[in-house]
Each structure stands twice: as structure tokens, then as C-alpha cells.
Length: 278
Image (cartoon, rainbow, N blue to C red; front, side, top):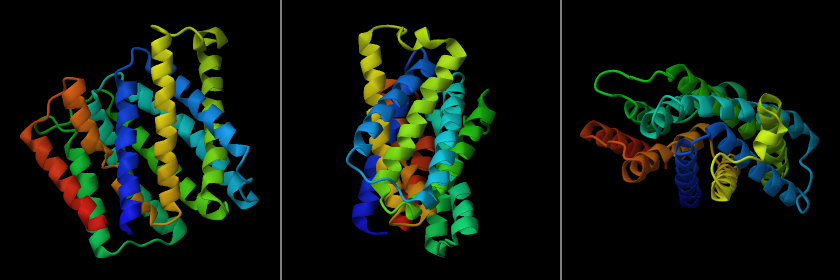
């Protein structure tokens, strides 16, 4: 994989860990996620005015991805109710690279070489190891974290296929994200009522923080989609999930979470896997 692509994906990983930390630290995470999606929708709609329409062959993939992203949002919010960032995030992210690699092999005919497979395995294993406390995963919301990982794998493969049929990766990203960004507020208002969206749980600063988090998330995933048009989906997914390294550091520095030696060793395995993939 070319070094510029690797560096871009690692930048996306930092951005992704940052907006997840913002979400995990919020008081009303469903509301925060909805405001993030509103920011994604507005920025994406603005971008569509100067981008071409994706080729029709990619439209079904864009629609399916938008629906999968809403499911991912709901599962992620639910998983953060009962787990801290440094535990829930690794399970959700660590379960996806292997699933993406399998999906890419079955649907796109992408078969990674032995070195890339070893790297993907190290990244996934290291990520999941970060979730352990002693010899077990003591996480009440484990099924939601694993469900989040399944949604990540599903929309990653769908977008990896769709972007290659779109004719323009940026156009596909903008239109798909506009659909996803509009669907989530609709789900929120159907659930809690329209007025709840405009009544922040704290202050205008809370709204601004969530809105900024949405723009960061859009930039992060836009980079990933662009990378999937240039490199194998499994390798891109594994490199993106190195965001758990940054999430562990953020959780330790800003959220008061622990970072033990076993978790440091797990981070070393992730770093080694990243080198093998790159």
C-alpha cells in the first residue's frame, strides 16, 4: 500500500477516535449523535452542489450504506451506555477488519497476501485484547459492541463496492453521507418528537461541540472511502481501526480511564500489524 494512503488512513484513525471520545463523554449520546449526523448532512449537501452525481450503478450501494450507518449509530450509542471508551470501542472496531476481509474476498474477489493477513490478524487481535479486564470481558453491553462491529463491517464492504462503481469517490461520499445524515434526525424525531432535537441537554456550547464532531466524523470517513477506491478493503479497514490506539490514549488522558501493561502490549501488537499491512 502506498505510504501516502497509509498516512491518510492513520489521520482518519486519529479523527475517528476524537469524535468517539466526544460522543462517549456526552450526557445525552443519542442527541449528540443526531446533531453530528445533522452536521454531516448539511456539509454533504453543500458538497453535492459542486460534485457530479455518482453513476447509477452505485446508487443501491449508497442507499444501503445510509441505512446501515443509522443502525451503526444506534448500536454505538447503546453500547456506550454501559461501557467505557477504552473497552467498548476496541470490541466494536476490532471485530470489523476480519469481517471486512471476508466480505471483500467473497464479494469483490480481494484475497490479501500472507503478510497482509498476518497484519490484519495482529490488528484485530490486539484491538480485541484491549477490551479485556483480566481474563474476561466484563462488559454488560457486549452484544451491542459486537453488533456495532457487524454494522461497521457491513457498511465498509458496501461502500468499498459502491465507490468503485460511482465514477467519483468524493461524489459517492457526499451523496451517501447526505442520505445517512438526514435519516438519523428523522429517526430521532420519530422516537422523541421534533422539539427534542432543538432542546440541547446543556447549552449552546454542547450543540456546537456535537456539530463539530459531526464534521470531524465526515472528514474521517471521507478519507477512508477515498482509500478504499485505491487499496484493498480489508487492509484499509485494519489500518483505520488503529484508531483504538488513539482512543486508549484519549481515554487515559482526558476521561480518566486506565492503561495497564497488558493493554500497552496489545497496542504494540496493533502497531506491528499496521507495519505489516503498510
